[in-house]
Image (cartoon, rainbow, N blue to C red; front, side):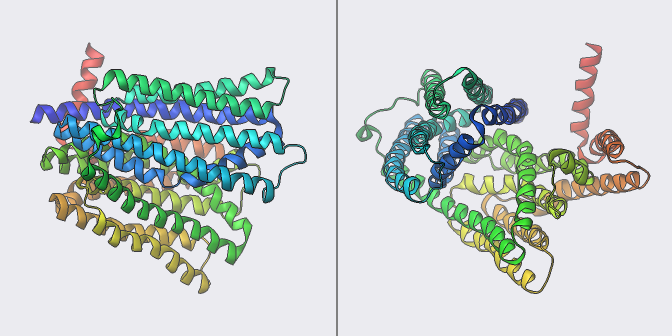
Length: 512
């Protein structure tokens, strides 16, 4: 049992490296691609393409819960080792996505074309090009949706190397599409939209062929041969409650923007928008780590190996936080200078919004293994009935605080406080569902990371009081923090056996 867990931990570590490699390449390529596309299309056509894509994507908000359901049930059946049920889950998921894609095309074609011709503000003479962008972007989205069950199968099998390479191939092809626009004399917006569809089809085909060759599960058959009403009910039930949670979360987030706009206007909205972009970018670090361990959590529950599940929740909660804190802490202490480097005109309240949203992300990453463990059980109805109203309470409390005259940033401070309440609630749920030990969590996870955070923050406060110059502070903060952080984590964040493994690894590499 111990050796199996050790192998799984090594697999998680290896998959995490693949996901970080994927993230780094994709972020850099996407940023550069946006620049190339903007230069090639021009501001007018670039704006048309983005507004058309935004309109289409707005109709797909409930594909995320279905993706989570597919991922959970595929991982669960893999853990159980039931090939027939695994095949049923995959096939039914594929048919659900296919039906969803057909309905989406029908609705978006009708509503979208009406909106495009009657409500969308488009430059004169570009209606036809906008229609091309609309139709081909919608078809590109369809292939992206149909690829989702295959992606879920790859992740459930923990084949993160292929998942990373496929994602990188996708963005590289899109970069090639952007460069090709420089050599095109005809309508560039039309050609760009067509090429995006071709890329979606190519990537879908690559992933589908890989899955067909690697996994016996992938054998799309007529629905009568794989129909399992219990699987369908579970998939849709899980998706339904996940959708409910997603709608509540989206409503709470967008509600904050509406509140800020009604009380302070668009300048504060701009500050919140900048902070949100920073928060989302930084959160990619912990998201990639979480994607590596989620399948293993579900498999542990499927095999009723609750001891391993509880240990993995403890470890991943701690390591997710430490990983994200290593990125967040230097950013927080240099947020003003970093925003000035990134933006020409920094919204006045953007720095303080960034700080609180980054703190919120730290609390969120602590909880991610907990709600993954809850999802692994499949019993999420009561969980959402309790947690979703707490999430939505952010809107109510924020409205009251703004009405009482508190500053704009109070809404994100409230968001952090509510998240701490959610942390307690989720701890209670994992205790009841999988026998999680709260005392052990406080001792082995929450106490060490609190001490590490306090030491590092105190160190940077002391250091910054003796530094002058924004660039000097950024460089010295980053380098000195990295050294102090490594020492503090080694001494206070790792257990003795973990430190011994690190020492053994370093010695083996240095001494051969």
